[in-house]
Image (tube, rainbow, N blue to C red):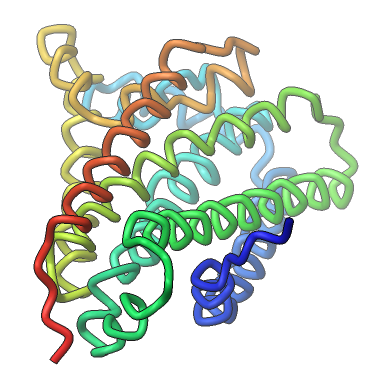
Amino acid sequence: MVINMKIFVKTLKEKYKGILLLSFIFFVFAVFVMAIYPVMGEDLGSFDELFEHPAFSALRKSVITMASLEGFLIIELYQWGIEILLAGYTIFFAASLVAGEIEDKTIDLLLANPVSRTRGLLEKFAALICMVLLVNVVLLAGVLAGAQYIDQDMNVTWLVYTHVLLMPFLLAVGAYATVLSVVFDDARKAFSIGFGILMGSFMVDSISLMSEKYAVLGKVTLFYYFDPGKVLIFHDIDGGAHATLLTIAVILLGLAVVWFEKRDISVV
C-alpha cells in the first residue's frame, strides 16, 4: 500500500532551496570553527577566567575549559549555531506552515486536498523534521570533516550521540512555532513572536545560571533541558530531560492540530 504524502512532498519542494543553502552554510561554519581551533590554541585557556565571572558563567554551562576541542565546539558551534541559528531557522520554517499559506492566499489549495486538516498539518511538520534531520547530519559531517582537516581525534560515538540528542530540543522549538503559525495569519508575526520567545528564554536561562537563587527560573525554558556539553564532554545522557522535550513537542503539536481543526479560516 502506497501512502500519498502529497502535502509533505509539496512543502519540501517549496522549502528545498533554503534547506540546501542552510545545510551548506552549517557545513562551512562547522569546518571553519574546527579549522581555527589549532590557530587559537592555548590562548583559549585565557577565556576560562572570564567565564568564572557570573555575567559570563552562563555561556559555559558544562564546559570546563575552552582550551579543549570539545569545550571550544560547545561554546563556539553548538550553543550559538544550534541554540540560536538553527533553532531560529526552525522557527522561521514552522511559522510559515499555516500562516504562510494564509498570507499567500494558498490556504484554499491546502484545505482542498482530500485529507483532514490534522493529516495536512502533520505532513507539514514531518517536512520540518526532515529539514532539521538533514541540517543536523550535515553539521555532523562538517565537524568530522574539520576534525580530519586539522588531524584531531574525537570520540565519534559521543559526537553522534550529541547530534541525535539535539533533535528533541529542535522539535520542541518547531512545535511551539507551529502553534504560532496556526494562531496567526501573518507568518512574519508568528516568526517574530517565536524568535522573541527563543531569545527571551535564552536570557532567562542565562540569568538562572548566574546564581542559585535564580535557578528555578531556568526550568520554564527549553534550554534548561538542553545541554550538549553534558553529552559531548561528560558522556552523560539525561534521559529525563530529553523525554521532557519530546513530551513538550508532542503536546504542543497536539495543541496546534486541535486549534487548526477548530479554527475558522477564510479562503477569500
